[in-house]
Length: 180
Ligand SMILES: C[S@@+](CC[C@H](N)C(=O)[O-])C[C@H]1O[C@@H](n2cnc3c(N)ncnc32)[C@H](O)[C@@H]1O
Image: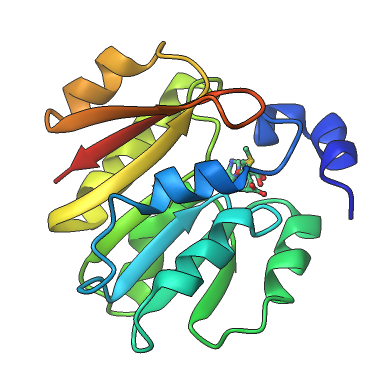
């Protein structure tokens, strides 16, 4: 399965021409306290570039729930041989309902490569509400961005947010690190 072909077919959903680089995976996982995190959530698992890094750093007794919309990517994610990973073929906008149905109280970290900057405003607002509802106190939400256009909106929703950046990706990427 070719990421580039998928991105031509589903550009608004994917919002990138290539899987995330290892530099991005490093930046997105660094803010997470893996020594304590038991429930981790990924938004936009894609081909698994970030998923595999999260799994490599997770505790043996932790679980990772990865939301992905596109069937080709869901199949790729399901081929990752790790019993701590659950792949959910659904929108990240349904995170709260998913956690409630499984009686999971809170997530310790949410790592997202969703194209929030280019998605419609109502969906973006819904995603932010889902994150706020799901993150436990002290939990972190890490969101990649390719511009700073949503900075004000992020700060309104997550006042405790800091910024990071890497040029080692195509395109170069910013990261919002939001604390609950
Ligand atoms: C920029 S791509 C990154 C994918 C992955 N991290 C990688 O490097 O291969 C964004 C991903 O978010 C997924 N996506 C977009 N909107 C979504 C939504 N509402 N819920 C779940 N996944 C979504 C896309 O299908 C795509 O796989």
